[in-house]
Amino acid sequence: MMETRNVIGLTTLGILLCLVVQPVFAWSLFERYQPQVLVSDAYIELRTGPGRGFPIFYVAGQGDEITILKRKTDWFKVRTPRDKEGWVHLSEMQHTLDLEGEVINFGELDQGDFSHRRWEMGFNGGDFGGANSLTAYVGFALTPNITFQLEGTQILGEFSDGVMASANILMYPFPKWRLSPYFTIGTGIITTKPHSTIVQAEDRDDEIAHAGIGANLYLSDRFMLRMEYKRHTVFTSREDNEEINQWKAGFSIFF
Amino acid sequence: MESRLQYIFLESNHWWKRTVCILLLMLSANVALAAQPEELELEPLVVREPPTREVDIDQLDSEDFEIGVYGGIMQIEDFGSDTVTGIRVAYHVTEDFFVEAAYAQTTLGQTSFELLSGGAPLLTDVERDMTYYNVSIGWNIFPGEVFVGSRWAFKGSMYVIAGAGSTEFGGDNLFTINAGVGYRLIITDWLALHIDVRDHYFESDLLGTMEGKHNFEFSGGLTVFF
Image (cartoon, rainbow over all chains, first blue to last red):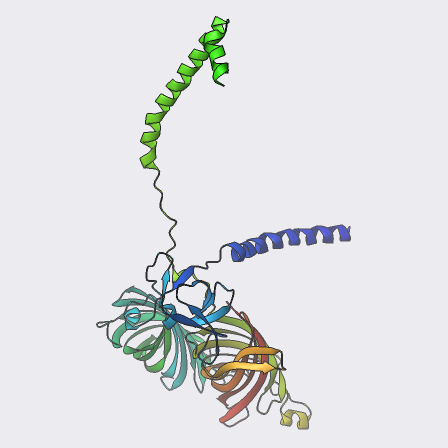
């Protein structure tokens, strides 16, 4: 009886696995997008790997129809008509045309993309009222001037640690600048937990609101640096609200 | 052929055969005539455009993300060394720089005080489970090919990496900075082998006084690009 059940169970599992795996394989086998382009420069250089440090082992000549297989950062893996596979840099790929002779947009990132970024995510660290803070965030640009952001912060102090979750709105008056300042306001919750070496203290949950200023500095590609100052108001259950200053700096990448 | 037609139309005695033949001829001519204008009308409707072959770079299969597991030995100051296992995700922003997030766990051993005094454990079993997470930036400093024997050439890169995170140590979360060096050996386009040496530094007062602690980790791992 037990064996029969096992067999049935295994068969069901097998069928389920097939159902799950098969579309994945089918997708990878048939749906892979591998367009063909024409070399319009005198030649393009193929390297053995996706980086400057790899040697050039082959060149594809003008008029060659090459197939783009995949991409890794700014490098494209291509196959030549003679079945040579190698990596070509974006700057050289820009000297190829599609099969109708049209120029292809290879999407080299620049400051314009930074100004018109849609999604961004970042990580930064700093000081939260004397404690260390670590923050991860995800932002979505509603317009080039306004970004909605969700933020999670871990606060690591000498006597206590805590976590803070908040939602923010960021306003960029000059989104086109390389060093782009912003104002921010937001609200959230903070949970504080005293350290195990501290006696007679209990965990606390409080609401929090904040306002701050900061700036993004576009570095290159998808990278930007961020510096920020925020003043938090913690709505405690005690008589007075608590005011906390936070300074932080970190990096972000955008898509 | 001609003689046969002559036979059918002129010489045949069977008048009905002739009639049928003539009727058939008229009918087919009629059908041909009727069909011709319709074809003329249909012709302009067939628009023959070459299939669009515009190249869309965003649709290409890109392999900028790397995910994997690692394991090794982590030596925790005052608490001996134990095995460490973790997962890591990296995003390669350029060929030179990448961003990595890692999460790992290990177990705290016994301090020499605990061992010598022969009792009075400093921490509970739960507190001995140590976990950490961090986010770091890595820089591929020496990318290039490496040769294994005379037949094999692999792509790889040495990298330096540093970042910040948090460590759960003895029941408390502590701000931790990490720095180290590693080597990534790319076996195929999508599979890589890692060897890492990392120092995790935090300050703790678990043993009475607040002091900085260096914790070294030696690990190897396997990652997949996607």
